[in-house]
Amino acid sequence: MKRVYIVAMAVVAMLLLGVGSAYFSDVAKSNGNSFSSGEFDVAVSKDGHRFYDDYKLFSFDGMKPGDERIVRFYVKNRGDVPVSKISMRLNVADREDGKLSKAEALVDNTTEVGELSPNLVITSFNVTVGNVTRTLSEYIGKSLKDLNGTDIELFSGRLEQNEKIEVTMGIKFREDAGNECQTDIADVNMTLYATQ
Ligand SMILES: [Ca+2]
Ligand SMILES: [Ca+2]
Image (cartoon, rainbow, N blue to C red; front, side, top):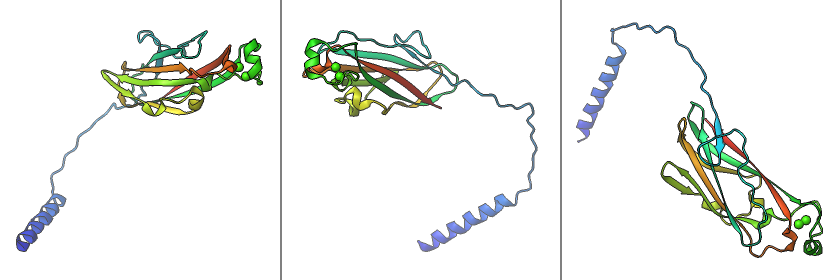
């Protein structure tokens, strides 16, 4: 058994030497080559048909505790270079809408800062590409305030030109939110980062 092994090794070594001592040669030419850069562009859409570089996706007004809304949007690769990763960062700012309401004034002593975003909670979070849906369960149960400034990876893989992803987020106004949230506004800016 041991001998067979040694013989085999010797054959391999000889074959390798043979490759190094070949005398064949050949020349091929290639002229007129060039590099050009492709376009790298992602865009966002509310309906999945018309896409924009900058677009307001939602405005939910007059919400009351217990209300739930679905945010749905699409991100498309509009360029001709494949996208390998898309992430999203939310920038959330809380403000009061003018002066405090009567009931609010009794419990809210911060007139400049609103209290809404800690009371808006993610109830569902899905990303669909083609017919595959992935749930981003690690963010469910977190508030918009918790997600403020966090980089959320929406997609990783290969998104070709004109392919898109669909993102849906369920957001619920906590049932136990207090009067300090009345007439408050949470401004949400969303930035989508795409990587080649
Ligand atoms: Ca306040
Ligand atoms: Ca308030």
